[in-house]
Image 1 (cartoon, rainbow, N blue to C red):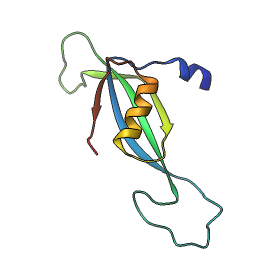
Image 2 (image 1 turned 30 degrees about the horizontal axis):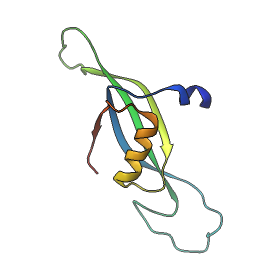
Image 3 (image 1 turned 90 degrees about the horizontal axis):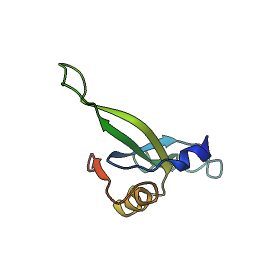
Image 4 (image 1 turned 180 degrees about the vertical axis):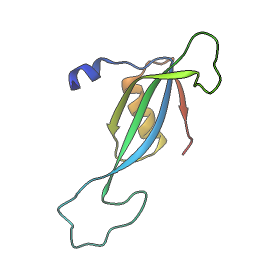
Length: 102
């Protein structure tokens, strides 16, 4: 499955966001940890989702777009330079990026 995921190249509209997942680090169990965003117990990931617009007439209470595929990559920090570097690895130059701006 991992080899198949590497074949996907994002084009068109891509939604980007970062997220943090709790992980366990055995080395510093006695040390007090920071709480919230950037905690030592969390790993930051970049989530990239390919979005295609649905054709046809828009319907009431229905979304006008649909996800095609999603890629999640572990990143060292949430800086824009890191996100742009990872996006350039998995996307074409003509990609339209949408983000929440955090």
